[in-house]
Image 1 (cartoon, rainbow over the protein chains, first blue to last red):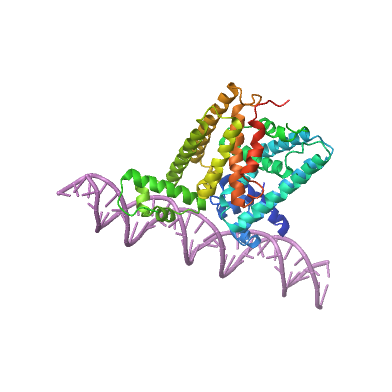
Image 2: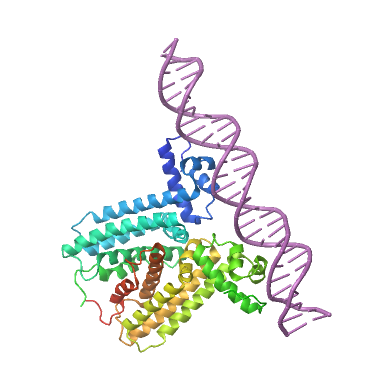
Length: 201
Length: 201
DNA sequence: CTATAATAAGTGAGCGCTCACTTACTCTGG
DNA sequence: CCAGAGTAAGTGAGCGCTCACTTATTATAG
């Protein structure tokens, strides 16, 4: 799990970040104490403060790295540009399902930060993180429309936001324990009308 | 604002509840201190504890009353059973927009509780609150399908959950300040394919 | 008069964060 | 090559403050 030996500043920072994201996701921002965060990373509390000036700064760094992870994941899925939109949507949700299935606490992180949006800095970081990914998605959708493989009577950024909503919904369903009602298959069904080729009458 | 005089136990409880919901919504559960909650209700901290055994119990009571409010609102909109689904969806989001516009902190409450779902009691209350409203919606949608005014190739409970997701998305958009991208009109556009009469080919 | 609505004035626990210090590694002059 | 000065990584203990919650007391509607 956590490394025992002394490591480079950068490596240590990475360990702290990934463990902190998991802890924040599992417990929420306020229930995650600095002592807990330190323990999870296998270091002392004091060391946390040599890497991040405050607990809040640590959270924001987690948001950034979470955003990067999502961005990379999306890019990997969307890079096969010749793909049929339906297939792409499929693999999007499959990937989503895997992510949520294997590391639930990482994805719960996405819900946790919603409660801290009153804070200006956290809100700014969250907004940047989401918009960046929305823009990536939107560009891909736009390409699909231009190539004529995606219906063009709905603005692509709208579909992107729909996907954000579906992601939230899925996380919520998982945490509430109602995945029997709202599963990956359901997500696909709800997105399907927007990733067809034909425009609606 | 807050009543000054001595009032009946029930009335005082209502004042505390509604003010607490607003404060929780504005600040989040943990940032809302008991002293703040008391001040908002115009009473002493100690009195809070004569009405609710703990801060957590107060939150749960807020969740319940929030659920009731939504339930009543939905019932009012859905009671006109002869309505066209499109129109109903319209007024749903119009109502939603008004609610969000006039009392944003009440609706932010919906986001805030998402971060506290790790707690068993809070999760149970939230789940009950959501499922109750989902069931109400689902019954109305089912009636629409049976009467043939709503496409019947999508399970009604799925559409209900979609609406939950859209509600979340809208709240998020409002709090992030991206309502220029995701507004009530956008919500309607995203729901439209599911509230048409015709089945998709 | 009295039941109870209401409060003023606490208290202990736990939190974020810091300080003074140790341990492990790296580099360089002789 | 290597002693040991210099530095970066790391820590245990605890301070100050805030918070959820309590106790002891007063005020008033019926």
